[in-house]
Image 1 (cartoon, rainbow, N blue to C red):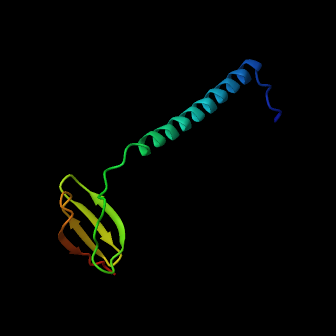
Image 2 (image 1 turned 90 degrees about the vertical axis):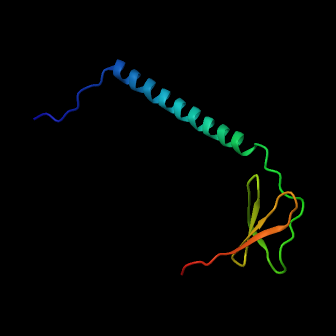
Image 3 (image 1 turned 180 degrees about the horizontal axis):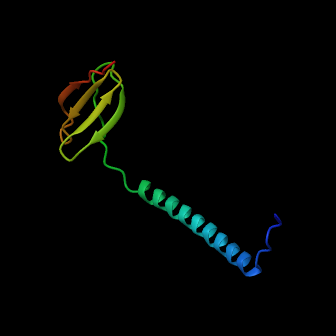
Length: 100
């Protein structure tokens, strides 16, 4: 048995080189598109945050979320404070009980 590899045609090598080049260009272009989409998405205008939120004594905010009719602040002492967006008054307080 002869284990000598057969010679590869020059046209096949040129075709493979072209395929690799096109794949590389496609991957680079795709990466640039994804980066552009991230930049566009995260540079959009931010929601209007309240000018001032009065938290109960000793509470520190760890998260904030809002809708059209309320906004909520999650505090470091495991509470969710729901506020009225127009008056800024505390509407509801929810104590979060974390499971062990």
